[in-house]
Image (tube, rainbow, N blue to C red):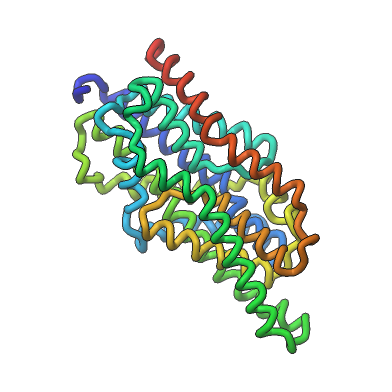
Length: 334
């Protein structure tokens, strides 16, 4: 493919579509950043989304663009990507996000995007165009990120309970209401560091396909645009999912919210430093379940947790199928 195959208007349209997905990613995944701090009553909903959105955007100043490089060059062969592939990937991911948001299911926007990219690429060039090492990283962390979040959340809950064992409950509650502001900020930084960069990777692929940049250079306007779109989307908040994440899986107090957010943030920092695109939804869900399990096994609604896991399993194949369909339709109408 050459740069002449993508007109300026098509390029602008697809960049706008990618930023629309990024906005929806923030909107859909706002629950990941704010559910615990809202459900414990530390912040009101409108305060929480502004708090989370600010720290989503602040991640731009802190983290390297390793996740963007993985998505842009490590999932599919960039040489087979054209504007139809990008269109199909984004439409497939957006469609799955709308469906799961409507039903209040905390699925992964990240895996929807990666599934969409894989599905559209396979539709165009077959499975040989997939890069096995990158996909293996993503597949491994479907299990690793929630398990790590679970372990860290549970360990932090046990350690905190032991340290504060002789303090009166009212004093513990007061202290952890303050500390939860810091833990929710850290989680939102992790959310921004990982999720915004996935959209950067898609735009990078598009610009490479259009001949507007090379595989070793991401134009300077891409990163701030993606962080801004994600942050603004988070500020609008996906309220249908907040209740599921913050109240239905297990009942959280400020100490539990602090442990879940801190465990989740640590997991995201590790993944972003390694350039691994992970699901912030999987991560915080695992941390919340870990916190509930540390209190008592019956504190977790395991039936609901199982339904959420089924949504995780379906996300990549469902978004891939939708993306392949969108790719075909795009070749007819674009």
